Image (cartoon, rainbow, N blue to C red):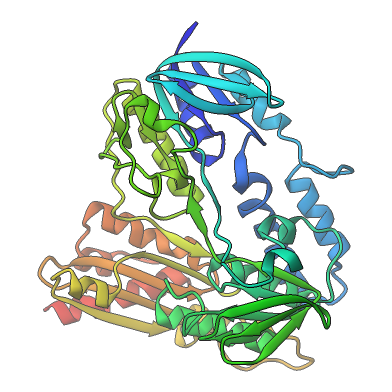
Length: 462
């Protein structure tokens, strides 16, 4: 039969596209070579956030064990009593909507045609009016002498282990690296975090980076910024890493968390569908995630920011467009979060980015520890005595002076990932700063601190 829609890849983007397509009454086939639900559900977002929650509890209760944390993580990824997660719930969900789940390796052979290999040999041909490619991304492994021979963990190993190493060296201090660093150090693992740039979380606001750096150092993480790994070998504690400044760090385990790269769509045969790709195998997409006639790309494979919430959004846009319904991706206000303690969150442009784009912008900021909410939260630090200070953090907003609206917002504080969504919605609606300032925010909350920040911005707009 010819399906209305074939979705290749069933991670966040593919699962969202297949779900919406089936809910809209389309005939849908989903092809996946691994777990339905993808990286986020089993190896990344969900297990890491469970472990971060457990680590938070461990920070104030030394009796909270890794065994308990590991058991909760296994429950979350449906791996209780087994070595590999089960995606049965995800499969039941899609099949319950009427979608056809196909296990195997896909390759596009012609416009609207996909071949699927099972166990490397048996082949099935599927046909559809439209294809959605959502095959995600792969770890970006740096070219370091001896790395492959010495062996290393990726985030999959780091979030799924049932036995803690005594020490780790983590290459990369983006969101994945810093989250893993805090998880491990709070459970008593010696952690060295290596970052080639001059600061951790280099894509975040400098204030956020510094606040989280202070927290990690306070908890015992050794941070080596401004250096690169030049050589790795077995020895010392387990893995010995030579750095570009001539020094050496060691750990029982080496974790590589240096980012991910979009999948090379040439390997999928996308060009056989008449779609042009660049030298890295990436497509050019329009506002409907369309790469060419009858072919759409969503999620990490589309390039750009790599977030589950963005992949889900793009998958739904692609499904609607593929089925001939109104659809347009608005990627102007994408929230970005790192769920360490304290959390970091952002949306929109920094002051420098706004000014570089020709926006007459200014910045307002508030020390979270000085706010009512900040003072009500005792810092997370083991102490027999009361800690008589507020919890560190900041709230910062970038204001478009000419339009009187938000151009960006940043926060590092408890619940920053929730707090940022007022700014996200305000930017989506182009809500005037004076309206945000006039909005009643409950006291004493982080939202109230944001409202006060908007009041300060409104004064500067007068």
